[in-house]
Length: 184
Image (cartoon, rainbow, N blue to C red; front, side):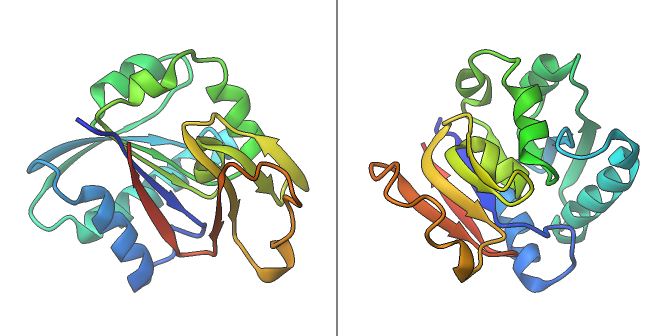
């Protein structure tokens, strides 16, 4: 089974039709009961409850009759939680903070195989080979789970952020509320 990656440009917690489409895409073709791991390693841990509520509410608003089972990711239980989940959702925050945690785990590509992996903002950046991070004010090396160079929260002023670097990678400009799907 292919892994479905969905990268989102940012502000996914805002209620609007574009974000509804994003969360519907995550749940598309899933079973009637679905296990979702919410990963908020990119933000301050004091915000975990707030982020959990906001993200789970976005899923609940568009799930129809599906039964959703949520877990909040813990760095110490992450591998087992990822094995349990059918959907892994990486929320926004600081890309460098998320990468620092995720780079501790080996073979994430295999761990994510056959699952739906969605990343918003820092989550999308981290899944890419390279990204331009506004919070870090520069280019960061991501996990390279997707062959992209990504700019979330995209505006025209960021268009030349990669210069002539990484020409072999797809350039992904993701304005807020926009998303792109990859199946690999």
